[in-house]
Length: 424
Ligand code: PMP
Image (spheres, rainbow, N blue to C red):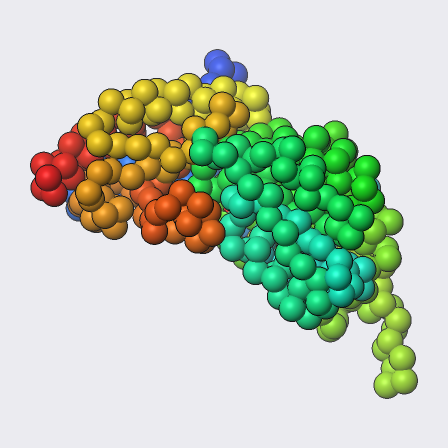
């Protein structure tokens, strides 16, 4: 066996969680959490914007560049074959992660945004016509609004919006009422990036399918927190981003039911998405390759595969149980802060805590907390219509990950006391 082959067989370092979910051990897997900011320990409460990366993901990507890098699907040489194997192994990991029936249902894309645009510009453009309707919800991220608006402008279709209540829950009766004979597509977030609300996707799929509409689920905020099962959900499409689920940026996934992907025209033209090309006629490749024009993000896909392994080692249920404990602690602690109002109080939610403080601009909150080493998000969170629904221009948002602790929340509460001292 060559040195290269031997080194490629060295298994990546594993996280030992045999003693149960020990958040300190989980934290040790994330080198960046040992950083100090302005001389203070980093308190990272911005995982909904992007999660931090465990060593195993960093190692898998370095390993690829150090030992395996070559272009996929093209060469006959050793490294190209190896890179292709690793890239396709990552696809199979995503298939298992989503419990998709077929590996061909997994399309690698840049992220959730690209996945949604892909569906809008392929299935949307061919199956949505003037007078048809696309239904979204009032809690969508801009990336699950704008691609549908663009499609509606291009086709003459209409965008409909299902409302939510003051707690941030979808009004299912209203949603049902809005699914009519012209509804071609329902596109809805699994989990809201502002409110944390977990939407009842199975029920939404039942309602939509009963009227012949397809369902796309924006899973960007669900993938790091929930066990996913596209077959149990019954959805037609599911979109996610690697960087929200402890994987790298620049890679994400579109899951699509096989028969739908097979009927869809290509999104972009280029290498790899073809069977044959002549100046007279090009024959397109089958899914998923039809939708992966050009050299893909190979290291990204492999890093995403490592992130999926990491999530599997922790266990979706164990992560959810841990995060729910920290979430309850945070909800109580923040409710006790004078003048603080939580936005998003649905009973079924993940660890996303949006809030406003009486008379203090969210950006001021974020700036003061930053000097304490605390990273939160402030602004409209790419959900301006949702902000309008709550009569706000912006909120502050603390969001949790598998590494978040009650001490992080204590630091946040202490930081907020400082904010109030300075601004009130
Ligand atoms: N949908 C939701 C609910 C999100 O939170 C995000 C990212 N903030 C996106 C879509 C877009 O994801 P990306 O920027 O990774 O494409």
